[in-house]
Length: 266
Image (tube, rainbow, N blue to C red; front, side, top):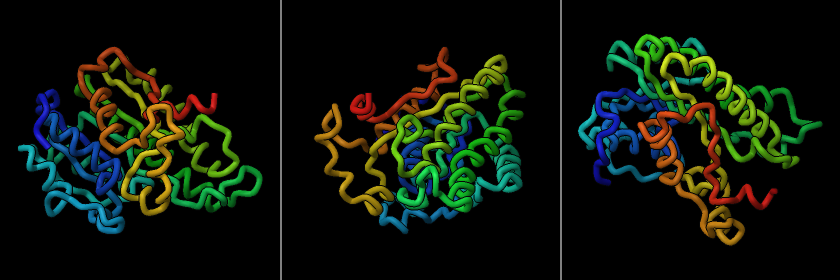
């Protein structure tokens, strides 16, 4: 991959859950734009679990190949104390925190267990923790740093699952719906400080985990108006939009990245 116009040179970005998959795609996109990138994951070698091939020894090395600084921090972002410590370290080592992409999370409990009237407390709390609470904790830790600078970009990650009424995977859907609501309130609060807060809502994306857990996903193209399943780079381009001057007058928005799949439900 070649460098892009260096619109984010001098900025420091944190991408949670970026050891592989969509998070890795976001991190590499920001590095190509000139940002120094902090890679966070609960395991920095998580790409191995899903046989995701890297172009260097680590995702940090992949970012450094674009001439930017990059460090990796293993931390469970559903734990507030670990998030606070991570942001303190970023500011100490990197000098700032200008961009936050809250990618960590996912549907890590089986969809069939997430039925509204029967889902267990454990499944619900776990799913809320990794999707919603991780987002809240990271935003709360980053906001004071961005306020002080008078500039910031926060991109939260929701899902098309937040917008429908599928009787399965309800724990995941309500967690991602809450991310949208939180995004809008945070955008209102932080707008006067020069901080834009938005979110994306992907649908069927061919990430490494999705290909392992849902191998039939790659065949879903005919059901999508654009007639193909999305790839991580499709989402990364939207993250670029929200992190650069292209979206200077955009905040509090949730943009679907679904190839028009949502239209089938209308």
